[in-house]
Length: 72
Ligand SMILES: [Zn+2]
Image: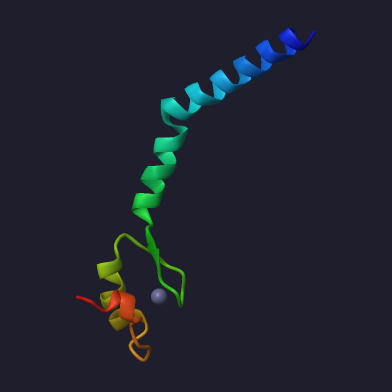
């Protein structure tokens, strides 16, 4: 009885692993790459931290760019 249960469990784990290999995971990684940074004020997705400073100049000229984004 427990052996049958184990088999089902193994199948389920296998399916999850296959799904992860097929792309569910890479799609998430791709999406994370597309919006790695968000503007702390308007939460606009920015593709790179170096775009935060120009975004601040364009959209929030009165705000100070956070130090971690002000390197460039
Ligand atoms: Zn913004």
